[in-house]
Length: 214
Image 1: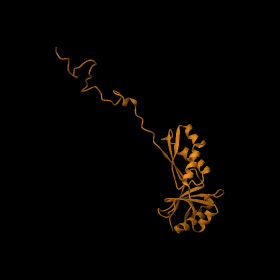
Image 2: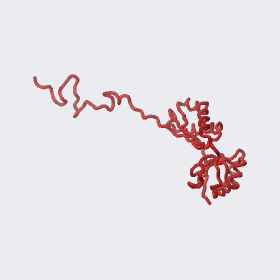
Image 3: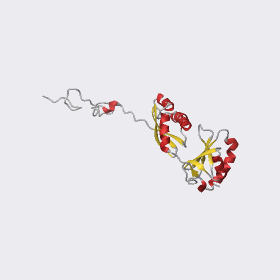
Image 4: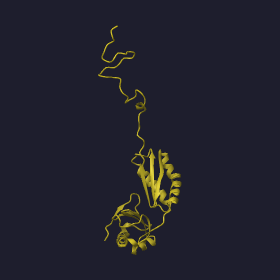
């Protein structure tokens, strides 16, 4: 039997991420069909599945729960994984998803981030996976991942069919450089002091020596 174990997905109680051995499935994206009982659960909408390298994201339909249905789904999943050739993927239009995601970000969901001084952009879409980059005041903020992850991800999933995953990456803000360090004589500029002496204004004598005798 192929080993698996489920992990919770924050903010999505109907979804579990089932860790599977690398190479157990060659799919990457929404699953359309699978062997046996698990395929029947997919066909009747009881569960939806998204394949990623080393894991399967399984989401239960409304009215079902992992407490009540988890054991049966686990059994069906184990049996289906024994026949990887019987799994099929659903077609995904990444270009259409990217356009729809951009439209959602331009609306109220993105405006909420902008009001807090943040910026969100679509870095790319591949096999239904949406990669977002967060910048501006959101970068480095401990709440950035939570705000974008819970607000935008929920809005995107509700508005855009075909999304399999939303991944948020912070874009570091540029390092602050004091203007004084860029100006002559500013902080960090070479000092005029040498061996504890300071050249006096208007004097051409080297430090540490008196005026030349006349």
